[in-house]
Amino acid sequence: MKKNNLKKCCLICCFAFGFIQNLHSQNKILPLWKSIPDEIKSSEYKEKEVIKEGKIQSTSLVTIPTLSIFIPKETKPNQTAVIIFPGGGYSHLSMDKEGTKVAEWLNSLGIVAFVLKYRLPSDQIMKNKTVGPLQDAQEAVRYVRSNAVKWNIDPNKIGTMGFSAGGHLGSTLATHFDDKTYESKFNTSARPDFSILIYPVISMDSNITHKGSQMNLLGKDPSQAIIDNFSNDKRITPQTPPTFLIHASDDGAVLPENSINYYLGLKKNNVSAELHIYEKGGHGFGLGVKDTSQFWTNACKEWLKTNNYIF
Image (cartoon, rainbow, N blue to C red; front, side, top):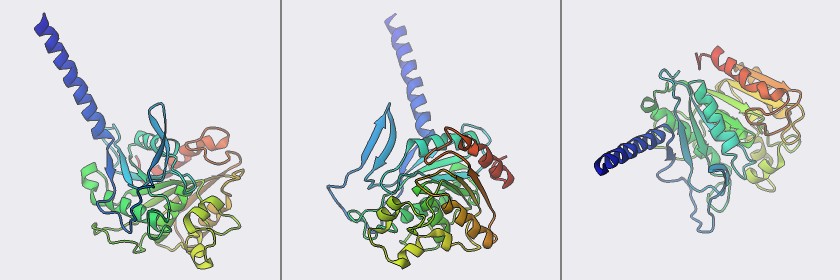
């Protein structure tokens, strides 16, 4: 009897171990850098996570950027990947609503998703805080593209998705992917093949920017040259990736003019683009929780299909 119980116990343990191993094979968290560029060490600067019901809701004071990998369960993925930049005004990262939940939705479309936990601009831990987040974004694309075979990804089907200030980072990457901000070990392009920008901060112009994002990224009294450089509607070229944009007319935090001006800039440069402005939705609605904004995922899915990123 004891032997049978022991045997059962061993089987249960093996099953549990296999289940846990399978979980980890699906969702791994990898450090982005072996050596973080232009890093300043600060013992007082430590990451702060907000955890609810066992899930990280948000985090701030990030010192070690990571990529969380979400692999679709489908046996025939479409070989498309999306790197997600959560928002949070460049002061924190909305890791669940604009990270994990979005990755799971992308998985349901057969897309391999990566959530980037990027460094937030700070003079305490980086020599030039205006390019710290961009360094992480550039390296994330290079990292995924260089390891595309490992995850069954087409290196020409790697996109980005940014929310709010994460949308500013996404549009910065789309317009500054060729900027040499560090020495990368990967000999590959940091240009995304497409961008999805959800209620994004685009401009640093004081008339329409999100003031918190502007101050956190550029400081209290940025020069006009720096403002213009990070006003991404002014940095669009014909090489800027095709873009899908979502905004709500009643967004009081990040004015819809951010998305509108970016769309017009893309159109002027003959870059493929689609813009949806919803009457209601406010700001920070994630995958959509109320009013007309709750349907944006359907429109995005159709856009991905039209552009042959999903089947």
